[in-house]
Amino acid sequence: MRIYVTHPSIPKFQEYCEEIKEIWKSYWLTNMGAKHRLFQKQLEEYLKVPHVSLYTNGHLALENIIAAMNFTHGSEVITTPFTFASTTHAIVRNGLVPIFCDINDHDYTIDANKIESLINDRTCAIIPVHVYGNICDDVAIEAIARRHGLKVIYDAAHAFGVTVNSESVANMGDASMFSFHATKVFNTIEGGAVCFKDDKLVQVLNDLKNFGIRGPEECAYIGGNAKMNEFQAAMGICNLRHLHDEIAKRKKVVEHYRARLSNIKGIKLCEEQKGVVSNYAYFPIVFDGYKYSRNETFDLLKQHDIIARKYFYPLTNSFACYKYYPTAGAEKTPVACHISERVLTLPLYADLAIEDVDRICDIVLS
Ligand SMILES: *Cc1c(COP(=O)(O)O)cnc(C)c1O
Image (cartoon, rainbow, N blue to C red; front, side, top):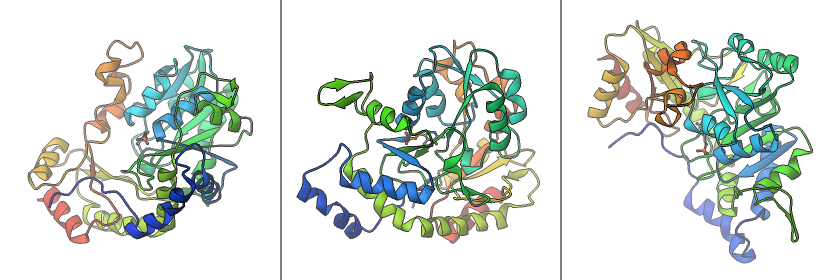
């Protein structure tokens, strides 16, 4: 049977049916119904944050929180190209200019030492990415942001449920975006959320995700439509019950990968970060001086019906759609360029059998 890089976690069919029963009674399908309100409250408790705003997907959550900050058109945002298309697109689609900062070569998050030289009087924000669930150097980023009066919005799409020194990552910076896409550690089929501290943003975000409509006769903003519906919220309520067990199962898979692939010459694994309790979202390995290249290993796995991902390749700053963009160009971020040509994320999900992990490792090491 084909093994994909991921496989969604879903509750028992009966459990989901129970959860959506009330929707048949209420006829309330979307627009902040009972499931939406309950799920939002559960997330505020689980993530230990003052405010959560729910979205139909993670990308629109990110677009909306950027829009809510009301930056001057054409302002610059410091971010990294070693991410999913969504991060860079969310900046550009808001009329802002992405300035690509390089990543560091141990956890592939933004290199905080390289941020300050990119700041000028047009800079308005930093949008770092907790890539693979590895947590950015938030202390350094916070200090830089304070010195220069910048907002910090984390793309935390990979970091749901992660804690650092027992603190929820969702409290870092001014805001954090999570994705609940089917392929993520925790899903609501499609879905996403923004966590934030500023009370004033509650109303703005609620307006922005519903066409800017504030009341029956008032339209306050030029908003789009980004609301999470009741069926998504119900899926989230079910999946949240099992998240702890799902992460524990992922941990077992990762431990087995580590046992098999550590200390192999030319294969580099991410080190576990100090004080961080991981969600085991991804298992990236970097081929640097190994007997086979990343691409050769990818092809070999594919011949065995095992679908790994070149995640993240290409870099967003070398996308065709940014070809004529003045700040683009992979050569400006050499570390990100080096890693993206050598990294492969191996299949990882809660129900991945240990025998299959062994089979994958046998092929990689053959
Ligand atoms: C998945 C993902 C997103 C977008 O989330 P969606 O819910 O798919 O819209 C954004 N950033 C990163 C890093 C992601 O992996």
